[in-house]
Length: 362
Image 1 (cartoon, rainbow, N blue to C red):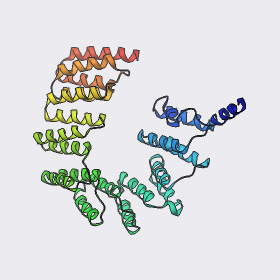
Image 2: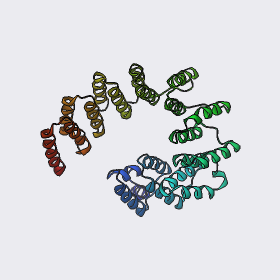
Image 3: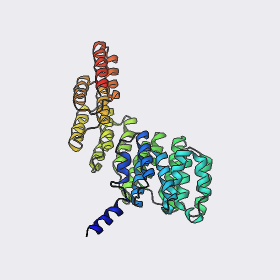
Image 4: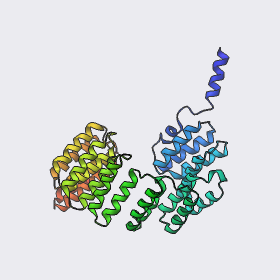
């Protein structure tokens, strides 16, 4: 029995005692910390399961740690971890972000033929679109159509985003029609880009027709991003009553209590001048996410300053100062600018001195 226990312990010691992504981020998510943890892990030659590598790559990408993600992917492949066609597409994206588009093109050319599928083509197209390489993106899209790889809304969304960023909004409606003709169903992102393209040319009735079409379609249910998009369009157009109607829809759809959704609600209600709703959403945010982040206070204090509610901003600043675990100078600077603008120079000087002391103690 003792021998069997030792054998199990020996086997288990080959693997990491904790999930790989937890190990990489245990010292924080700074580039240096992640890089050092990854180096230590690779030196240890401890084993990890493939799913752990996949989860870790997703988390590294979400935090824009592309070089460590690429190093992990390449090292694991060298050690015998098989790459699926999906893995190749992810690797291509990482190569583009870590080493540049030329390296990504070279990686694509050298892929085995089975890996040159809709996923890798789509990844390369997305790289071209992000780099605003219009000619290459359009040429690759034509190739994908020939190969019948342009069958998902994602590839069309990439191209539409490129046109939006290069102020070629007139191209987007024709892409929508092309999608429909090819029986490629728009997704939520498609509708969002389409709405933004119409708002860029001040076609608010067109934006509203898109929303109505989405509702009639029934296959795509607008999420909170759709209604934050719509509310922002209405605010830009000075249509505050309609904006607040869209914000009510946004709030209904924030079932996952997403922090970013709350930030949009506070900011957009602030832009409509509705201080009562700003405070109501703030209370909702605190109930939903009691552990408040610096970014939440930063956003709320900025909105209160913009609404000329300086006493409210000061009260909130004191609350933040008493609770924050990390002293964020950005929060201080919002109040400093407000004091300076209101010619409250004594308060500004007092806040400067206090912030210096706090930063020294941190």
